[in-house]
Image 1 (cartoon, rainbow, N blue to C red):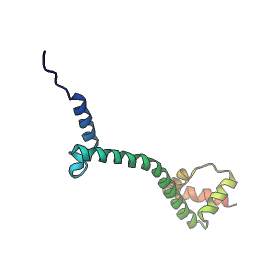
Image 2 (image 1 turned 90 degrees about the vertical axis):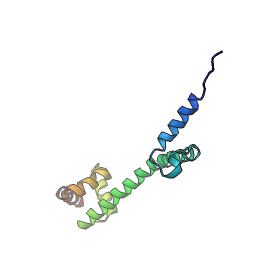
Image 3 (image 1 turned 135 degrees about the vertical axis):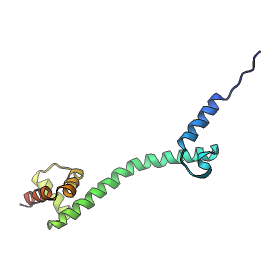
Image 4 (image 1 turned 30 degrees about the vertical axis):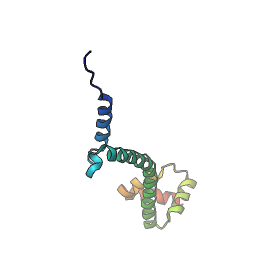
Length: 115
């Protein structure tokens, strides 16, 4: 009976884990035990931070809008209130982009909702 060499699944699994941890520092890129824990932790952080990214970006838009609104004599909360009452349906992302890239357009929007 011919000899059967096994271990292809083990090698495939090991290779996949080490590919995930490519670029990590020290033994976390080359030692299987360390690489496994590093890969799991990296996945947990990635999952968590995909959600946190949305929070962080919304806070950034609010900060940008507040800064732009204060140049025109309004606070962030009063600007948002005025926009809602005026029926402007632009979201914070678009408004912050307008405020940063097209200050004249933003000024026109603020003047329109101030009345």
